[in-house]
Length: 426
Image (cartoon, rainbow, N blue to C red; front, side):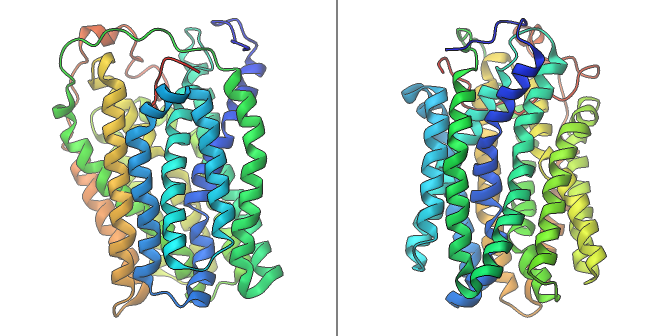
């Protein structure tokens, strides 16, 4: 195994490893989770679904994600981090391929569930691998490397924004099936560089013995924030394309919207949010993220102009992936080191619960008088509530055992997403 030496590896080599790992979020979120919004209008029309049924399919995906997030550490111990990361990508790819081969609602629900479970394992284990690419003491380089990994989400959104509309244009009514199949093939291709990158990550240091309490009670407002934020942002991501199509935007206009959203996410993850989050204390960073995402939802609800859609894509896209980063920074500051893994694991489950409930309720509202816009106003309400709850979160000092290794509160960039799958093996 190539174990990039502690602090001695060339930066270019480390960035190439992080880029290879970014194939994980490309598949996990860019394809499996978010591309469904592009396919939904075509699937709903051809399969005669209600919006509640369409939201239920995404809820099945989110339920799988809950189980995957809760069990990721177990899979990592069972298979090794590198192997569970790659196996998750392969299973996700097979679920994508199978989704293009059936029109049965029950079968699609099961496939969305399986895809949610496998992608959660991939994403959280990949976060742990990315945080270990640089083993030296340079916090800025480590944060930048995980930023490269997280930018895979935006890259995946951009790719799906190119592939899905092309399939819908070429194959018409059955284009949604071709869209799933093409993304499945791309996901299988992504497994190769992901596997090579995982093999190049240094092994984790021996885990320290857990001592003292977990301190999770102090994060109670953050748990509530994460549920509300997850429900609010994912309701928009699920139904915004359907709203834009109702407003008269064509296939390639909505594709442009999705591509702009993904590019904004990738760039902001790499260049903006790290420094901002690193300088805010308590719940102010999560509250700011909620506020920016809320502002990003409003343009498409207040205007049906193409320009409003693009403004929404830029603002919403620039902020929605800052949520996991902001809450992880806060957890690392407030929890003793031995509780980081369990704390982030439970926070991830809370996030997933919100993502499971949000689309279902939003879909039910969208089926009532007022249509999709009424359902998307739920996002605004939930995001406003999440911002208010976040501001009640107070920050206290970490336990002495954690302060030696925790990042400095203001001088360092935001700590990267820490996976609940921080494990002992590759």
